[in-house]
Length: 153
Image (tube, rainbow, N blue to C red; front, side):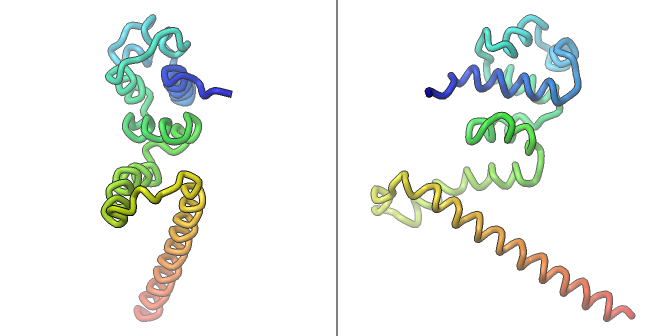
């Protein structure tokens, strides 16, 4: 099965953002300063949206255009809409900007040795490391909080 064309993925994202915003298509079009028919045909996938239109529609629905669009490109629309505007979305955006540069700098000439099949395992290893790091920070924070409370008695 072939993945849908990019413009159809964008249409699904925008339609989901409009639906989740609770606004009508007419309200979103007004807030985005676009014609209602342009927004309707875009949401239906009958026309490909321009980047400025995507940004305007996402902003009009209350979603961070940059975070939401980036997450849609990397994962899918549901993932993007459910996390857009969160610290997690900003973290993932920063991570995706930094990772290629860091990998290239660390590997140098060995960059050609990378194999696509290693990507998922590397992602799992990174996620485990982040989970452990967050758990350690939470434990330390609890311990510091306990000392502050005990010390103030």
